[in-house]
Length: 516
Ligand SMILES: *[C@@H]1O[C@H](CO)[C@@H](O)[C@H](O)[C@H]1NC(C)=O
Image 1 (cartoon, rainbow, N blue to C red):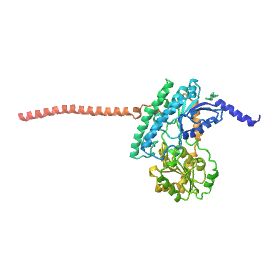
Image 2 (image 1 turned 60 degrees about the vertical axis):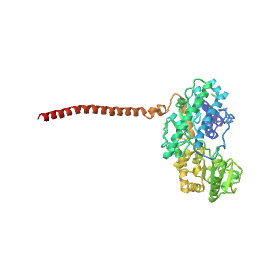
Image 3 (image 1 turned 120 degrees about the vertical axis):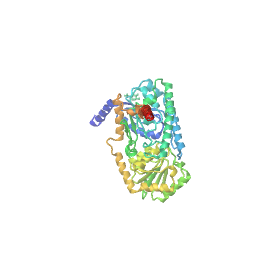
Image 4 (image 1 turned 180 degrees about the vertical axis):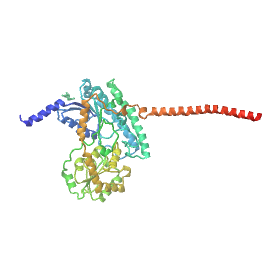
């Protein structure tokens, strides 16, 4: 044995000694979510931790430290299913979707024998990582295993997350997940937020969480209220960073780790390489993600887009799901699958027209590519607003999509000055004291090291009437009333007293005058 074999062996032994037993519970079946978590999980394994993953995406990683408990095949994986459309009703529909999938996610997870075996065997974990999204079912499983819990996300907060972490959620300046307006909503947008916030919270607490609680109760009779368990979460690994989303009001246990999933761009190959390299003026990349079908765009809008493309000197790459020939092959490259990161990382890519999903937005900022953000569902409206507010691009709402507006949007983001600024923001995005993946791992390990410490903000635990100081307000109202009525009563009685002698004097004087 020489040092070349001994040193890695020593490292392996040290890692084994320090390695934690980590359980990750990812009951949701969204591919774009797992795409982010996967990078974190692989990093945990790399650092010598023994990782058990409950998810719909078994990894076949080959590592002896990565153990799948697979839920695959129990739910259809969503891909290319959303039509190209957005309205108030789509947003209400999202609430229904989140509730029904949250119920199903919980049912199939608890029905899994391997999951219940973990609990029956009382398997020991040092820390349990739980996705924070549409369901709190995983918190019940974590409770049975009695380990500190860390929350993980692949996007921005859902409306029902603010309360549990004690994060201010004032519609006047906190962007709302599902709607436009960002940090500067109009009066009507604030009304819209108010109504939708009540809607989403009501169905989450009274339908989703209740469903999950009942499902858990079928198997275990001692699960505390899920909302109470949520308030015990040690840290939340939130998938954004203030360079993109702006400064937010977060307690110290909310850790911004946005950016870690983006891999290094590889050189393009084949047809695509040729198409990009041979473009004289550069290329513009168009993709609306894995959930939205570009090809469901209404025909008149497609015509407008093609018109705009022919007016611009650039070449275009479009993620498109049908074989239809839209345009000259030397002008437009269409494919159902495209290496997004490699395209964004290429020198000749000048702009990205995107649906502003958090994954795509993060990849664009990583490579400093200006965006035209056209949101469709979920958190995309909030992300699109962040893109515009941070200076990374412009928003274009689906309802405003026409020749004129699209051309104006392209002109704006293709301006060299705009581009220069985006490069600067991208540089700031990378300029951090600790890399996002190091940070995510660090706080996970920290939670395992101090299982008895909890850093939940007091604002999460204070009763609602105290949070808004309603009792203090009420005390002042009562006090004011007491003072008001008191002084009124006092005044009346004083006046009466004061009047009596006056009458007497008058009478006396009258008497006197009479006498005189
Ligand atoms: C690693 O995790 C697996 C699966 O949960 C478990 O069976 C095994 O005992 C763990 N290994 C150690 C060393 O704890």
